[in-house]
View 1 (cartoon, rainbow, N blue to C red):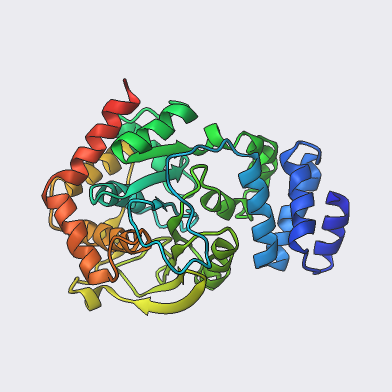
View 2: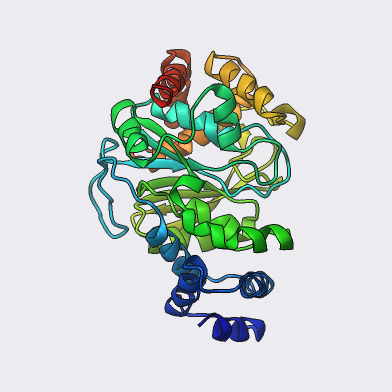
Length: 350
């Protein structure tokens, strides 16, 4: 199937979801040669990946991953009820690829959201485009990454937050490692990880580096059965909700999609510069996160509050950004967010 798929894509022909599933099954099963994998993903990038193609690939990624159960109930996209945050499992996972080297905003946000009583299954990896990925900064904070699937599931159930270190859950990705590294460009694999949460997150805030992809990825999340999600792209190219520019958001709410823009001024926040939220080494970013969770007043706090608010809406904890920001502030200022970090450190090292 991979040869036929390459032939079609090179000619600019879109694949059906089923065709994509078959091609990706060969890739993730080790049946495709490295040269075929490289040719296929480059051709897809040049053509432009469709909703059906990304959906098919993501479904194979999910099928091949190690899955864990953390007690949440998947709320289907067509469901009109069930707005219980106790049932929601949220992921705050971006695609990376912005090249802007900010600190780990979504990682900091995950502790704030957990401090509000929402279960967080934080899915991530080591650095892609910055000096420091989510795994790098969590390791610098003292979190042990390789605790295994069973302990990770227990961690989320018992303390309300856990880190799903991608290499432990997506071993089939090993077949694409060499082709991806050797071609050295962004491909469909950069967006598949955030679409393949091993805990079956029911709600998600997905940051993307390309504002043209917000509707595409929101439709994919709908196809994958998520109840509520925000796909956000900063107009400064940040793969988060930003405070240096407007942010384009496509929101998924029980099967319905809507796209709009937000700005920091709308919520009483001062517009910042990229230097205000820049990152550094894993150690430096760990210090930044600790400072935010201790209550520092800064642009770094503001960007975390805004992203946390979106996650709280996605998890059915609140209905709008203003009230979500207030809940996020309370999580930090009460010390609950910082305590979630300390609990995760203790649990992972026991």
